[in-house]
Image 1 (cartoon, helix red, strand yellow):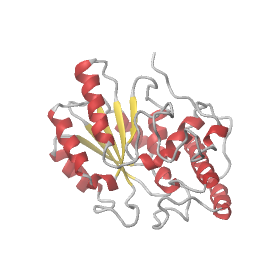
Image 2 (cartoon, rainbow, N blue to C red):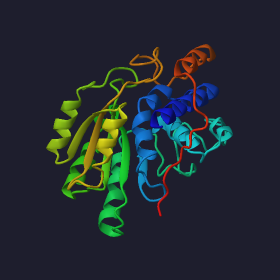
Image 3 (cartoon, helix red, strand yellow):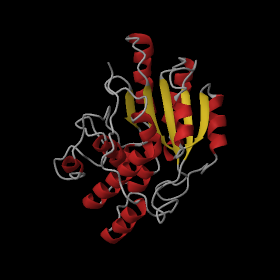
Image 4 (spheres, one colour):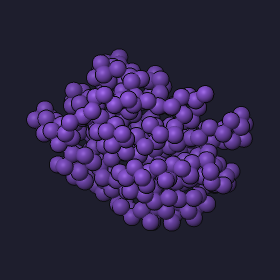
Length: 270
C-alpha cells in the first residue's frame, strides 16, 4: 500500500508545481518514501511533531496531506497563488505546518526545543521528527543543535537526513558519503542509522528505533533527487524548477496507473 501512496504523492507534487509554474519538485520527490513511511505508519497526528527544515520541499508536505484526505485537491492546486495558505514554503497558516520555514539550518534547533519540552517539561514524550536536507548541514546552527541535543540526551528527537547529493547549483560537499555523515554525527553522541531512503523495509526499521534509544537519533537516508521521473533523477539544473506541460505529461506517463481507491489515512492521537 505504501508504494501506491508514494506514487499518488508524486502525482500531486508534479501536478501542483506544474500548475503553479514554480516550486521545488525534484527536492520533494527525493523524500517521498521517507515521509510516506513515517506519516502513513506510526506517526500520531496531533501528538507527534513533524518539522520540514527542508522547507522548500513544501509541495511534498501538501501532497502528503492531500493523499490523506486532509487537504482538498482544489486547495492543493492553489499552490503559490496570491493569498493561498499553500505557499512556496509552509507556514503555520497551513494547519499541519509546525513552524515557518525558508531559511535553511533552523529546523533542527526548533525540533531541539520541542524535544526539550516533550522530555523535560510537559513530559508527554511526543516524538519530534525533523526532515533535513544534506545541503543545510553546511549551516553551523545544525551542529550547535546536534551538540546540545546530545548533551540533554534527547531521545524524542529524530533527524531524517535526505542525502540526495545535489544542492541548488552544485553537488554537496559530501555528496552520497553517508558513512561520513554518520561518523561526524555519531561523534557528537547521536545514534545513527544509514538506510536506502527509497526502501520501505529499511525505512520502517529505522523508524522503529524512534524514541527507543538513549540518545537522539539521526536517520541518514541515501536518496535520489527527482526520484520517480527518469529524466529528472540525479540531474543538475532542475533545482527549484517546475516541469513544462510537455515534460509533465511525460513524467505522469512514467508514473503509470494510480490507484485512486487507496484508503490513505494518518493515525490520530488518542
